[in-house]
Image (cartoon, rainbow, N blue to C red):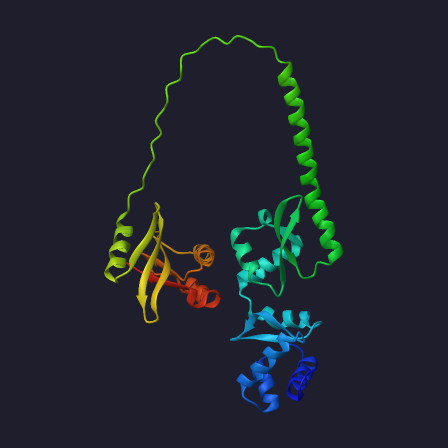
Length: 297
C-alpha cells in the first residue's frame, strides 16, 4: 500500500512520463530531498524504475512502458562518440566482443538505457554480447542460433578430423631417421627503447611536482605513466600519456579516453605542442574533466 504522498508522486510520473526529482518537488511544493526520498521508496517497492544515465546531475524516474520516452530524453545527453557507437550497434543488431572495437565496447557498456549487455552460457562456454534495444526476443534468439550453431558444427568437424588423423598415425610404419647435427640455438635479444629527450623532460616534470611514478611504458613517440599525486582531496592516481608528436588529433584523445576508462583513472595528456582549438573544444564537449591536457616545451 502507498501513502498519500507516494500515490501522488506515482501519479505524476504516470501522467508526465520520465521525471526528475526537482520537477516533482516543484509540483508538490516540497524540498527536492523529500521528493528524492519518496522516489527511493517507490523504487524499493517496485512501482517505478530509474535510468542509468543522468540528465544533469539526476537520473530519470519512470514506470514500466515508458522506456522509449526515457531514451528520447537521454539521447541528447550523449556525446558524439556514444552516438556513433550506438548507431553501429543498431546496424549490427547484436554484437559479440570480436565485432566491436575496444572503444565501442567501453562506450556501449555504459549505455544501459539503450543496450543490453548479456552473458550467455552455451555448452560450458561463455559469450558476451551487446543487444540493441530495438531487437525483439524472437530476432535475438534467431541471431544467437545463427552465430553459435556454426561454432558447434566447427567443433564437431575438428573432432572428426582429429579422429581421422589419429587412425592414420596408427597405420604409419616405423621408419629409420638419419641422425642430423643439432641446430645451433640463436640467442634472442630483447630490444629496449631508451627515453627520448621529451620523455626525460616529462619524467623530470613529474618528479618536480611531487608525483610518485608507479609504472611506466616507454615508446618511440608516446609513453604511458601511472602516477600517484597529492591533490586537495588526498592522494589520487592518474594515467599520464606523453606524446612527442608535432600535433595532437581527436583520434589521439579518443584513444586516451578508452585507455583511461579501462583503467578507471582520470588522464593527463602531456604534449610538446599546443593543441588546436578544435581539439580542445572536442575534449571539453565530449570528456569534460576526465582528460586534462598540458603543454611541456
